[in-house]
Structure formats: C-alpha cells, structure tokens
Figure 1: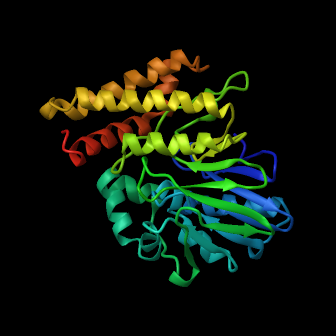
Figure 2 (figure 1 turned 90 degrees about the vertical axis):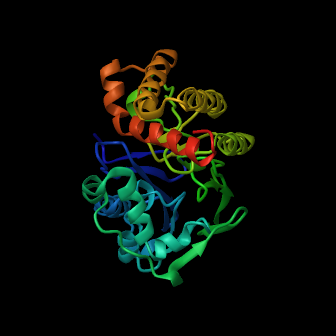
Length: 316
C-alpha cells in the first residue's frame, strides 16, 4: 500500500497507519513553500507526516497550520506530538474542543470508556498536550490563510458537537473529517467511491448531521476529503446516499430501543445488515467477508453511537 495519495491543488492524503493501511488519513496541503496539515492521526502517524513533508522538499519549520476537524483521537490524538515537531505551526480547533487539546486528560478518559483501556493505550498511547498559546479557536465563519490561500471553517455538528469542516477557497474543495462519512479506497470501482456514515458515540445527532451534510452540498464542492479515507467525488450523489443511510441508522436504533439486554447485540447485527445491503446497492468490488473486515471497528462504533443517541435523547 502507498504511504500517501497525491491529488490536485497540492493536496495529499497521508496514511496515518492506524489499525490497518488506509483506514486513517492525514491531509497535507502545500501552497508554495508553506504547508498546512488537516487532522493528525495518532502519535504513530507523526513520522509518516514528516516523511511526506520531506518528500516535497519542506522542513517542519515551513508548516504554518495544523487544522483539526474535531478532537476524536483518530483525528487529533497525535496533535500534541506533531506540534512539538513543527516549531512555527499553530493549531486550529472548534471552540468546544480547544480545552481538550490543551489538557487532554478528559479526552483520554472518554476514549478509554469507548474502547477499553488496553485497546485505547495500544492505539493512541500517551496524548501530548498542546500549549494554550499555540491554539486558535475556529468558530463558524472563522478563517486562516496559508501563503494567501484562505481556509474557512464551518460549524458542522451531527457526528460530534466539536466538529468543523474546512473549505479550501483555492480548490473549492472541503475537508470534512467524519461529517461526510467513511469512504475506504478498497470500495472504489470505475472511479466511483463508496460511502457509509459514521455514527460514533457519543454525540450522534441525525437532524444535525442532515443539516451539516446539506451545508456542505450547498457549497457544490468538486471534491470532499474524508479522514477515512481521502478524496470523494460525485459529491451530490454521495450526499444523497448519506442522507438515506443516516435515516436508516436512526430507524434501526428506534427499532431496537425496547430490546433491553439484547439492544447492543441487535444494534450491531443491524449495522452489519445495513453495511452488507449497501455493499450490494453500491456494487462495492469486495466480497462480504472483506467488507465486514474493513468495517469491523466501524460496526462496533456505529452501534455504540446509536445506543448513546437513544439514551441521550430519551428514546432508549
């Protein structure tokens, strides 16, 4: 598997090497002799990001921004360690997430609650704090510049309340974190990317996610970059599929709300069934066994997110 995928407009998806190849992307944007990084993966991603910079003839001192879509650790776990290697960079983050980058103790504890301590430590290690003076909060409508290339931040809840999407003014493209779902490269065929939503705990909110997807579609971007993994085109059609699948996940949750002790099992079985149905609908070019293997972690997280939504909304 390649360590990175180059796209137009100086954009590269760097493999963070989290769990398996091409699960988790760190996006690198180069403008002239300056660079920005969108999301960071875990601590293990840091050498791969630095190698991608070096391959483009750039030193760590030439990175101006590390821009986080949200503070889930597969997106932000390596931010502190990476920032320690980038002496001139500042970190951008949603106002709800800034405190967790400055003091990651609660974020680490929440991750242990989701994954269990052994898995969380193995995946993410020790989370390094980011000095407060290097953190810039980016509420809705905020922007930063990379050598004159403007990036605008959109508040996009639904996956998480601390989520922003980042509009690249030069390309017209959008860095969407998890708001625009999952699109693993193994699902791509004939230039068409597969798509599936991420309903990760603990802040899944279907109406908010629908609104955020619509907000991205209203920009009519030529491409969207998702953390899992890379570039998605034919954006309007993928957005329609996401809307349908968000509704299907919500309907599954509501169908399981009175299942008692069986709820967790039924939710996971239901997400698996939705996934395999979508594999056939979208004609993904991999057998069912490989689909289930690719989405093994996502099945668990989506089901747990649906359970958290039921409990938080009083529907459980």
